[in-house]
Length: 113
Length: 112
Image (cartoon, rainbow over all chains, first blue to last red; front, side):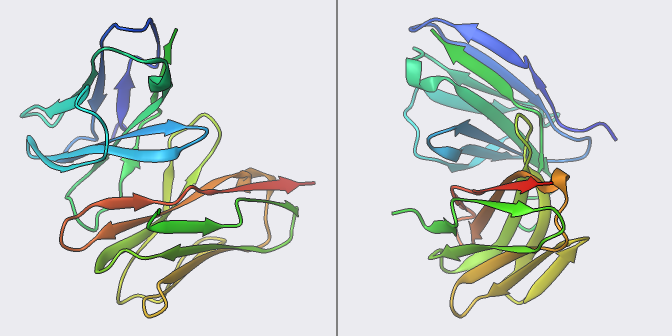
């Protein structure tokens, strides 16, 4: 099976712009989670989707949003970008929500100038 | 205060030696506790996942232990190899809300 894929892998934006990142989970997986990783803050949870419904949300401002489609693919959007949004954005998929192992994608490296 | 605390923040060990990483958590009740390995520039990879009723789980040279009474977990690396150089992250999922709490990670550097 193909692993979790994320596009694009690298992105450079300027302050005030908005960005959309995409994640395709492993075939058959219904849960997709998004994380932000920065050197200073480590891995931080953004949101988690299961069967097109947001099941959990981390402590991020409303500028961060996401959605999941019927084929389990997911997108996250960040509006009005700030310099502090520069980070590695990771997506992970799993079969179910609870005890299943999460498989991470390679991430999208976002740089905000 | 973070609900998952890891120690040490970083450590350096010689190839072939063993090491133990610690994870203390306050998440309660919890569904499961996971250890991930993250190589620089790559996404984390799951090493072990344990429910509250499990005490130990192994994955090759990696052995995780869990004491649900004291809310402590450890990850033991046996006979370390250069490829073990990575960040190791402890993650706890809550039972009722399914929320994930992440530790800040321990950076392990294995030197020849």
